[in-house]
Picture 1 (cartoon, rainbow, N blue to C red):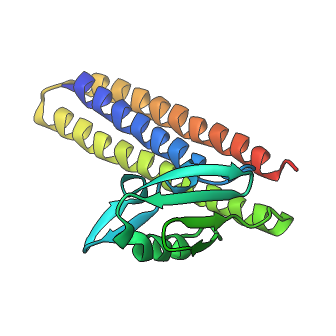
Picture 2: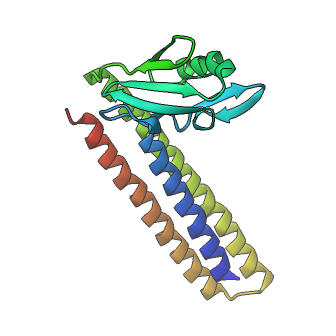
Length: 185
């Protein structure tokens, strides 16, 4: 029972780290790439739909992306979603495709991206701590119900703490790498 709880907590913490890694990938560092739009959601006929399901992407230049919608009637909705996203992009459409020119990465813009990345890292850590709290409650319940001894419960809590520490350290390492990548000119 204790092992299952710890295993489930480890899996959820791994997922939180993966989400943080994906979020960091959606923050631009140099060349514009389609991964920037991974988190953009379009209101497509009343249903929130990921942009990558509605369009294909081309990257003709370092700062330009071409978005080709599969359904031309969704052009306006896609353009609005791109404009409302926090990418700082200025999309323009010619009736068939949307041309997204990413702004030049100035020092100020880089600092903004660092703030965004830090907030995403903090979200991941909060998620990890939430998993820890739920797992600890479960462990306490197991000990209280008499399914395991107090020593086993204490040992499991220490293991849970080390698991939490290793996952938050992992997020911190990812954050440091992303920050240095962003601030590199």
